[in-house]
Amino acid sequence: MATKPRIPRANGKFDDFQNTLMALIAAYMSTWGLPVAAIAEFALLAATAGKKKMRWDDAWAIVKTKSFTHPQEVEMLAARKDYESGRRDDPNDTSIRLFLSRYIRHNPRVTNEQRVEMGLFVPDLAKTHSPHEFVGNNLVGTVSWGRHLVHHNEVLVPGQESQAKGDGVENIHVFIAFTESSVKEAPALDKFVFDGIVKNGKYQRVFSPEQEAMRAWYFVKMMMKGKNGKYSAPSEIWQSVIM
Image (cartoon, rainbow, N blue to C red; front, top):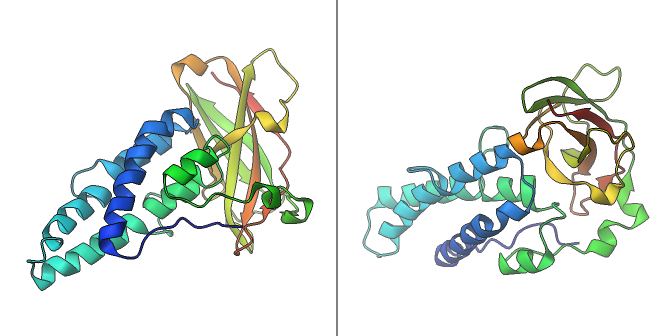
């Protein structure tokens, strides 16, 4: 199963790739059901002066002329690394790879046609959903507290104080669905969409004013490390009304 984006190694081809990718994400992201945090993260990734894409654009504009100094080349290489890979150990950082992993790679609202257009691998959906690709899931989630248009979720193993991800877990993915508040039965699993990633046992969900008084339903899956990209089974579903 293909699991990694096809990011070109050559700088000129990388520049073409990233320009197309950022333009298409901007065009399609409103249809992907992304959380508010993803919108802010994309602004940092693609449209903040001196950061990520814009830092790369400035550095590459000089180097591609083939008339540049050694420090300018060093800055271009550093800008590419920061833009392409970022820091996985910093939950506040972003990059092309981090954004794809958090919001696109396993988002069921991103169509295979869009993936191809963006230059990404199309996952082998049949293999992804075959029974032997699933592992156990002992995580339990709850809305620990809330405020106006915000749910603060905790996702932990019962009786375990550590908020660290378990051995072999790459990320914990959150899926969400919405119903009227009067609905007390959880929607079918195929009604849920990818919503984001648990960080240190916590997941904050910010809602729009139009979603007030609806009921939000959640479950999580663990994305396991390794080239096979195994998903755990879904956790138990939890829910709370949006106040």
